[in-house]
Length: 408
Image 1 (cartoon, helix red, strand yellow):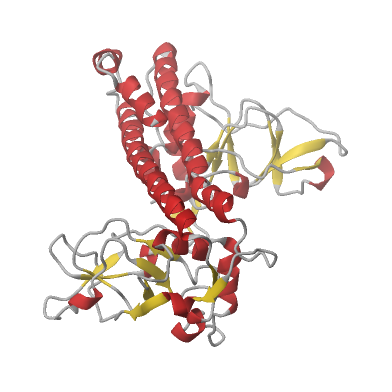
Image 2 (cartoon, one colour; image 1 turned 60 degrees about the vertical axis):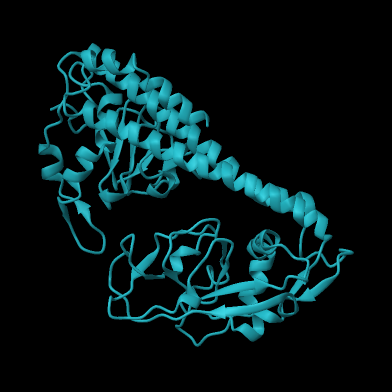
């Protein structure tokens, strides 16, 4: 076997502080560790085992989550993780790590589980699986080096994206501070006095699929749930149903989820661009500011998305037990809105669009980088990532392309 079952020889004293690795510490797909926990060895519990620096750990619970990690240090882990110790004369740990995370293995293993609510890998199938690998360890090392480089670039891109996601809140805080600060000198007005209208949509019975390019459709709640407009979240309107063109979503619309879970109700998104023939549903309001209100849509979007304002919105949501909270038009109109100088709002609005342009570029780069990485993975485990292929393609700029997209 390439990585047979084994018993770790490391021993800890009962009072030793040890890393206690659980499944929720492992990030899906990447194996990154979050919320690391340390306990006395005596408190680790009986449903755990010791691992060492050479141990790979594979989650047999819900394999579709793709949780595989190489800790490269000692600790104790939940028995939901399968310990693997690769035979380095046959296969490198890094090679096996990338393979276990690859779509090739994931597609194989997700169909070999038992249990409906808590699916676990059938271990006989796991141990019997044959891993494709070059017999030449040096060739494995070259593949691992390339995949490690590509993976590192994906992580750098993700870190950059995380920083970019904090840019808008930082800009808002810089210009306006906390919108619920009672000591603020900024005057406030009820939201209803600043709006020309709060448009309601309609939710007819739609087809259970996304609309084609030339079909009319109705937005789903997911189009605004995460604060960024996503026009792919829609359902096609039946051909025999006449659309109400007045409910078509347009560039520049400010959309507000009036009904959702308590955590998500009140989510707001600005439509920067959209496909045509999208209709407003009855679960989403369109907020239309008055022209003379001196409030920009960009400011209002970020204001309503601010954590303290989201708490206020949750406080006015109502609903029977067991139902999703709902914010009525009349209650939404009563929310007090701080009105900073219009000139400051205009400066902020320009910065918002510049930041959103960066987000769009970053998303495109991340998608291309992911495609490149998945191409390398596929070739690595189908025998196509040969020295000849690497020489031909890397010289043409695959590595340079990955680096360029990671830095964009």
